[in-house]
Image (tube, rainbow, N blue to C red; front, top):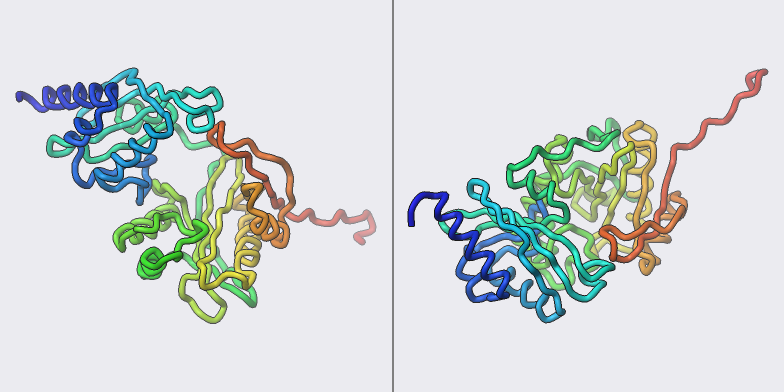
Length: 329
């Protein structure tokens, strides 16, 4: 067919035609059997095969979502695709129309990876057209706790590679991941679970990490993984926590202990000036956990991205030291 550039131009044109015509048969011919599709850096993206990608498109079509290609740009082995997506207002955006971008990576003449973006500059950076965005002001440099975080119920520790086997055990059994307590799908393989643990550890090394660092929750009497607390740097020295407890260990107050211990450590060791939780208004159990852990409900937080449900925001701030009187009392 010619040079590599010619091959890439041809594939980009075929991608445009298939997406414009919503021709899943033609699109399928362009995809590798193991194509992966998800947000940037996700170690276990939602779609990890050609069939899963095509099923995602079919569901979108059935829901009334449509896409028009606004641009295709070839950059080395990548294709930047701009899309104008329209459909039901709640499914796309409050206006019923939104701009989206994808970066397709081609290997061996087929699309091997699809990464989705809500902003063109992020997509362009992923494709190598622009430098990545600078770190947000007040970014946190993560470092492991200098002392053990524990109470009479639980202890927290750094992830270990052996935790992947425990995660895979839960992913392999019916209901093992109920409640979305761990960031992986129910059909996750052992390799997927190892990738998630590796991603947490990369977060602790302050390297590129999709989920960020996490601490493992374990029973005070058993070091096996019973849950986790994820840490997210929101900028301006604000840390957000996400947490989940495995089904076998629920109902014992582990979540309350874990969230309180991690939040207090972040504030007392001055890793953050504010710790927050974003909780679905329908999740009353998590709201009770937040209050029991010492968080205060502060406000309703608009959904991210716009058009999604609003969150309830719970916060914890450093304890104020008592003001000393002139006589030292």
